[in-house]
Length: 223
Image (cartoon, rainbow, N blue to C red; front, side, top):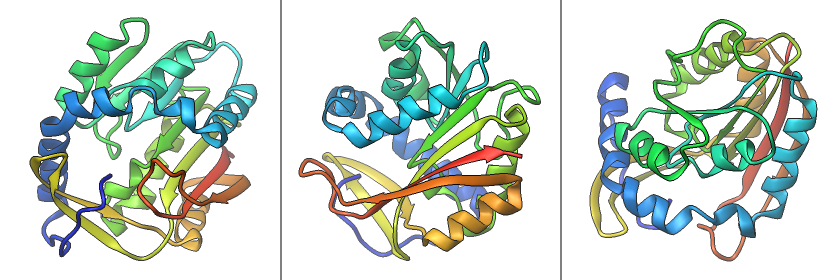
């Protein structure tokens, strides 16, 4: 996410998802070129992902929900677990498949995951639910719950706050996408409603190379 912003767009949720899909299609190649190695400079993220893998149901695939160009999926796959990246953007999925042939990637919506009931033994959603409309957050988390095995962990990361940041330009490309910041109580309540028990939460400031926001990570377990 860049620092360029303007007024938030308002419209039907389906229209907003289509705007989001087109925007990420537009920046897919450059997103990968710029951020493929970002976990190298994110020690907290790596530690939380490692904890997620320790808590995962043994012998089951791990889902990366809203995987973008697939670098987090690849990191998970490199730790010896079958990893499945799922993203709304066909171009992001295409970039990920080309860059990381060792992992599996699927095109799909957070509200209608292309996954069987209980298919995954763990899941991560790093800054992907921030593109959902407020009334879509709980259904998306309930859908993640459906795709997870009982007891499986879910790691969610969001930007903290109440702002809706709109981008109409991203790295020089025209886009039309909203980033919704979330209050901690909103995310925690939605997780509880969707069938998760919160195990841990962590807040951090942004790293120097990131957009300046405060970030919240929540580790929860499917009940």
